[in-house]
Image 1 (cartoon, rainbow, N blue to C red):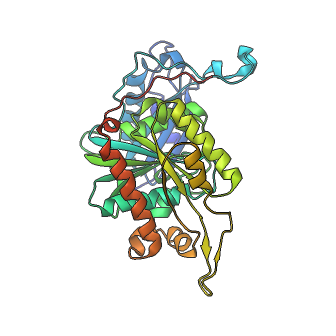
Image 2 (image 1 turned 60 degrees about the vertical axis):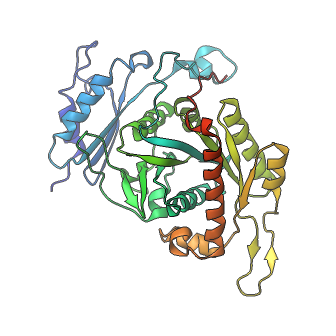
Image 3 (image 1 turned 90 degrees about the horizontal axis):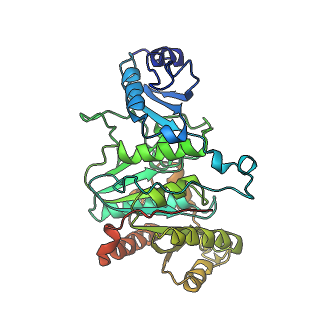
Length: 377
């Protein structure tokens, strides 16, 4: 099958006209980044923020026209908008602000059929959050639960590599995309649509729109729990998930040293401010045991996350050691819960997964909470 080209896509999109401005979306300069990978196409349509809802039919028309091109297997178009109010120079405000949540927006934005959505987050990068997230998800699968994994780190998607999965996203009968499967885990990541070495040069609104579509336009089916691998920090992706998705809770991953705990504290406070329950802390790279002599070394310190959890009145969910086996299995696309299920490291992840599930099922209210309306200034 011949590979569709960017020029073919641009030519096709000339058939899509802005109903208000009269010309086609290409001539009006509305088409942003176009990504092509193995027949999967993604592109952005830049619109005025206030016209976002109104132009949803235009977005669907653009997807339909591109989907009809030879060589195209799936299409994902996102509406993006610049928010002038977020520019302090333009507004004269002393710092960045975010728009107030629209009180008329649809509260039922979570994927239908998903009982619980849990965010695995960290205040900073490099603490092993994605490795922790995937092993927790697979631990939940091992319990016999129906589990999905949403890789929400648009700028640095890790799950395709961690799970060792590649493939083409197929379209279901309802024109939604089917997630890929790994060891019984349903997975969606922007990494399935772009090469590993391609940078995602997207602004905040584009990230927000992409996350919304990965939640609502994927055929997740019936799930007991969806695990969301969040990007590090407290930016647009985190606010999108907290504001527009009925999260059952968040889990904070940190290493023991003070600098990581400082950022972890910020992450916890961000979730609390937007009324998302924090299920607890995990201490990753908690200690190191020499495989030759058996001596233990607390390379990054030890127990800091447990102490911090006590200070912040949240649960300490468990600790995971720094070990070469965890790193090797992750690099090989065979997470340790799957490749070495009888190991002590897999047992640590399983205990954490069990506790998360217990906390979700003990409090039935967490599975039905509505997404909060927030204003962050």
